[in-house]
Image (cartoon, rainbow, N blue to C red):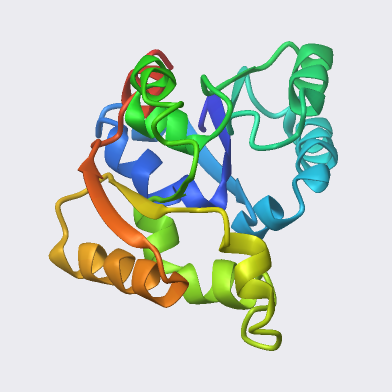
Length: 193
């Protein structure tokens, strides 16, 4: 039976599984919450609280694979109640880039919209349709009018994902930049489990 539960954002499932060593897998169970929670971050902390209440008696250790993700500290309050740790940083862009590296480019990237491998794959569902631009194209300048470019933080070296990210930038009418980050601070956080 697994001793550790990773309670994760569904957007991180592939990356988490790729970051775990085969020796860790018999001892770790991955349980994901819907990635669509990011379109309503006020629901992240309550959903994590409900999952922690459900699973805390079943595992010796629980690790939450979310950053703050727009909860404004509410997630940290929930985790403090349960004595549970989470991934470092304010969001996945920071831990994929490396929290320190992301902070170092924050001013330069202030007008950048970020994509990860997951978001490049799911752009149409989570961004285009998720924000209602498929039904209301007039929302595009309201959401993206102040952005200058799409920065694709690539976890893998996949030409098809790069092409998808570049197409997303074109659809938004923004310049495109690709930065290969690998798994950044995700891998060391999981290795510590």
